[in-house]
Length: 182
Image (cartoon, rainbow, N blue to C red):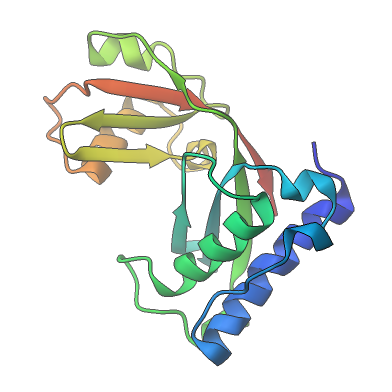
């Protein structure tokens, strides 16, 4: 879907947005028309930051609402400075972060009545999952399969992330795929 040059541009945009955040305390504001057409598409994205293989920030949206290049710039800045699980990134950490971008496909609703029915529809290594019940909502990107290989564990950890009890069956769920850019 994206050429090697387009992928490099997205990664460069993410890093420049974080760098601008360190210097000016604001995200990069790219002009979409200055980028190739595929990067101007309205697509959802997540930006993940890691240091030595450990999560350091991950922010994104599951719904497409802005051109991809803007989504990446905003999410990179937010992952570095506004992920509530971490302190804001500092200059020393910036030199050590590994940045990856997930470009999300459209979430598709899943029909299920039990956890087992939901689990049976998960494809390890392929699907991301969004679950929701009342005010509880969370998602795992397909990349999470790298550290959680069993579908049951995938759902268990996602429920925990959402703040749901393990006995709680989500009311709604959506599956999606993503293109990973590293």
